[in-house]
Length: 139
Image 1 (cartoon, rainbow, N blue to C red):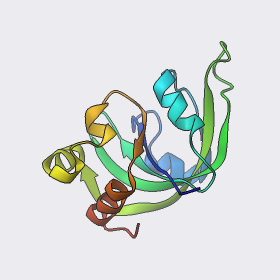
Image 2 (image 1 turned 135 degrees about the horizontal axis):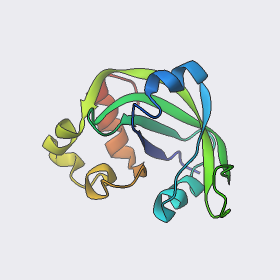
Image 3 (image 1 turned 45 degrees about the horizontal axis):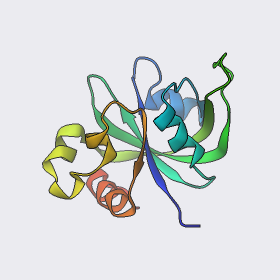
Image 4 (image 1 turned 180 degrees about the horizontal axis):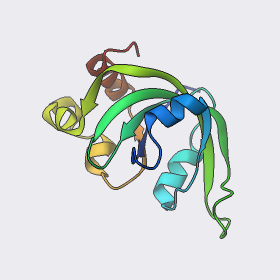
């Protein structure tokens, strides 16, 4: 199966790239949106993702890898939602802002733009390659 790509949004005040790097591997919990949860259900070990600081920064700051596939979220009393474990791989050389993304016509259909409220979104293969280039990292 072909590798898939994702984008994980986090408020830096709640969980930042620096927090992720310090912990290295951490579960991505607290998702309470069915579509975002379904995105996590589709993740496979080895898939890669962007770590995105939301709120004030609105920029891609790092690259992560899925190291454990979807399993029950211990913070969800309803038992409806799950989580995945992600591992920090590397920071990006050049953070890519939401404004940068919106300024690139080839990224007009990116879920980050189209479904801006979702915390976990898919990234297409071509979008991944272009964003990696913009970030100054190898795809």
